[in-house]
Length: 401
Image (tube, rainbow, N blue to C red; front, side, top):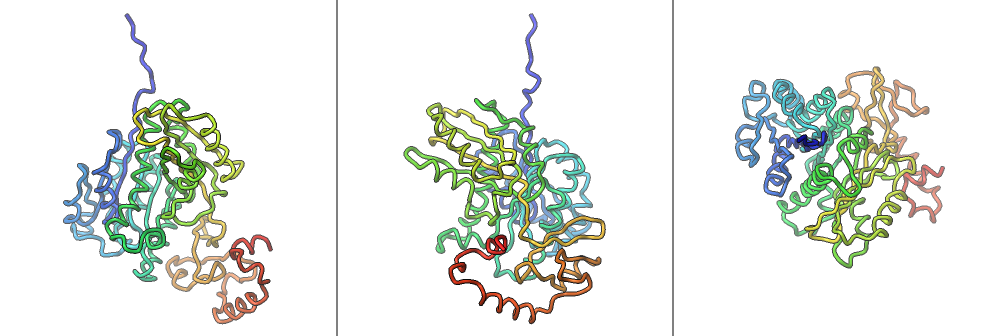
């Protein structure tokens, strides 16, 4: 008697790397949560003493010769060299995965230097990669923010999707009296919830199925991304649940209408109504670009502890409000300016160490705008704005011009 075997029974393997101090803290939190068996957690650090405190079973000390196990000293170039030294070990771990997540903090040494290098290895091995990184608090100083920005710029060239969690959002969105530990827990919870939702979605056969190739297709749109999870309890408003999933207050502010793709996973009990599923799809189509690739799946989970759970990952979100600096080889690096998006500071020029051009016709490639003249001009323009338009955001007013 012959037994028919299903060729696609293999469960996709998801590997999550936590890089540096911040990343390893996230891995510790994930280690204590209910993560599926097909998710491998890996702590990566240059600091041997800190790495010993990691709760996951797989730990990788990178750059033993470069750093002597003492950390990267807030120097991204040292973090990069440490990752490069441990290229073989990193490559072996990434090669075993079907999907790679990398999480860590930008602005220090290990995370800022090693994460872009690891992303380049994943790209070379053709492994889909989502990076979830934090940016420093404003009180940590301009220099640290500048390092973080440079690290994200480099990461954007390598990762399929980059999700940014600004630490300053913790101050805005959470209760001022919340403890620092609980605040970071809430930030890490975004990744935790998405991982749990994602593993359930692509590891189980759904009523309306989303497979690994669907996920890969959606995140192949390079650029910034947003992700969120929301639960709906009995009697909750469905529209509010959808909005909570799309607009998590701890994420950076990005325009979802510019997303080129989205994967939406609905997990629900058998009581889900057709009208609810239809409402989710219709609302998302309104929020996203009409030409965006949107894949919506439904998995029935009888033991679900809520009415339904919604997970959204929107990808390929462009940064059009930001200026683009063009390297001679044609690669683009996007930069944030201190005075909206019309100047390029000297420090940034020195970092690039190559001739650059600013994509504004009013500038000659060898000139920089005089800051005092610029502020004087801005002041004159501000007076000319009609009073009734002051409530309209600056970026929207510029688009309407």
